[in-house]
Amino acid sequence: MPGGHAIKSILQETDKHTAQDELNCGGCGYSTCRKHAVAVYQGLAETRMCLPYSLKRFEQDRSTLEQKYDLAQRALAQEYEGCTMIGDDPRTRGILQLIQQVGPTPTTTLIRGESGTGKELTARAIHQASLRSDKSLVTVNCTTLSDIRLESELFGHKKGAFNGATTDRKGLFEAANGGTIFLDEIGDTSAKVQADLLQVLDTGELTPLGGHSSIKVDVRIIAATNKALEDGIEEGWFREDLFYRINVFTITLPPLRNRLHSIPQLVKHFLNQSARKLNKNIHRIDDLALEALSRYHWPGNIRELQNIIERAVVLSPDQTIRLQQLPVIFAEFVQQKQSETFHKQGSTGLRQMRDNQLNQVETDLLCEFLNKSNGNVTAAARLANIPRRTFYRMLKRHQLDPLSFRKQKNRQP
Image (cartoon, rainbow, N blue to C red):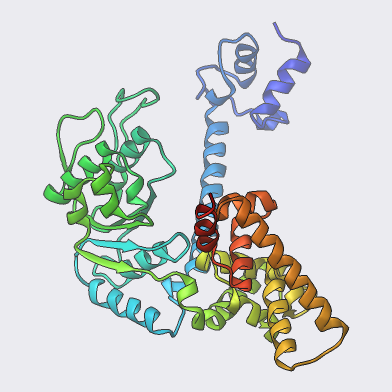
């Protein structure tokens, strides 16, 4: 039998701190709360058997979930801001026109483009322009789940279909019934998942894992990929019949380096967005920093630009973003421009002589590394102990062609 201290401790676990808290409702199967506490101490019962305690916890959990859902909705609205696509360049205007044309139709759409070009944003814009905009848009990243988990996520499963399947579960296709499902990076799916997707596209029916009967669904499919699916067909990792089913209408998103004229608009948009998110009064970027952003090649596309602007807003000590708040790599572009301007002015003196000498030393070193690597840029960058992209920028700055070094070495006896 437990002592008084042990009983008091168990009672407090179920929010019974005074005698008035002991309701003795009998919901746990014991006539009094203290008898229930004795049973818990003896291992014959559990604290969650207390009905008022469990109801209170359920209510608290429900309130917490509602708050999290509200915060998630606000974060999503802030992230996409009505699915607005920013840019006034011809490529962006063409994309917006395609979205308006395909949006109101039920046509299956394939969005192609490099990572970070805004494929999910485009899918949301298509959904908002469709007749299904009042229904759900369900997003699935096909790269983050194993094959069996992805099948379960998409098509659902029956109890016992695999280890851990303790109950029946509906898939996202059922959850999106009447709405739209966005399959991000569809090129990373397995042959089994591709076959099941083809069945849904052809018949509008799916079969849950471990199930024997099909389920009818009405879902519009929008797919996206950063891979060349035509190569996948030739190499055997993507089904040709599925490709033609999803490639009914294609939207190809240009990389940011091909639409640099939209950089000022994008910077302004992300600057205002980050200022609201971080609760900072920053809405200006100086000309030097903006020019550095406009001269960059943006391998990470729009997502990289968004992250850099948010980082700059965090670091800015006042109401303006300057070059100092940008990553060090952007200073190289400014230095390059200053050097070009200096040489155009025909100035003479110590600074010009120093720059000329440094450029010559850098050129000689690049040539040496290229000679050692037989014109292989990856191997040359490794020898120089610098990133390959940086090596490429240096080659471009000094107008060096790595292929010329490869030919030169091959001609040697």
